[in-house]
Image 1 (spheres, rainbow, N blue to C red):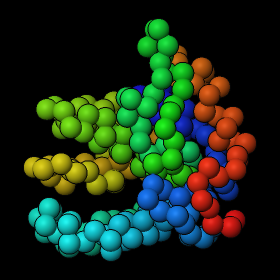
Image 2 (tube, rainbow, N blue to C red):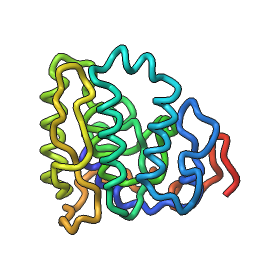
Image 3 (spheres, rainbow, N blue to C red):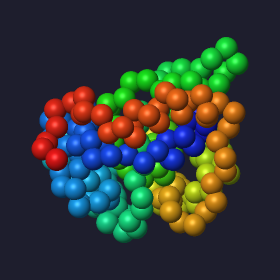
Image 4 (spheres, one colour):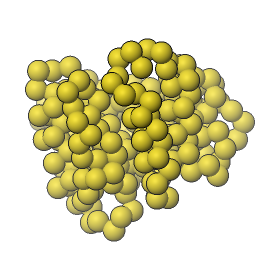
Length: 211
């Protein structure tokens, strides 16, 4: 998974990536080209909360306060270069060869977009073993490995999406000056399957807003 994240954070994306809609939406995540990643993510969160606020209030303690805190944190995010974001990077969506090296990433479209690669890193750690009995330990372990391999500081993106999880650490956005390590041995193979399609700026596979 670290090799896959290393490849994705190197891929510069074209305008088509910003025109992608996330699952269950028809309009582009980036509603306007100049909005910026933080504003695009805030808009997505606001739309989901508007749609599901009663259910969220029933399921999450002090939901309104946590929602406002999340909005404030997003507003404070610095501008960073955007890269390819898969949005659902779980083991089931990564094909490997007989030696366990990643060779392809499947099932794009859930939250695939142009965004901060640190968001992908934090999301991947949270989703990696979301329903397993050791979910929190798996998240902490993967975040530590991401921190070691990518140089992200642990202090920016909020975590704790499971019952009993506290505010926790967060993953700082890319572009903070931290050194990134070289991709692992499977990355050169993975580049052949991921990099060309994203850099070529292919036609949007979902309903898109005009550029």
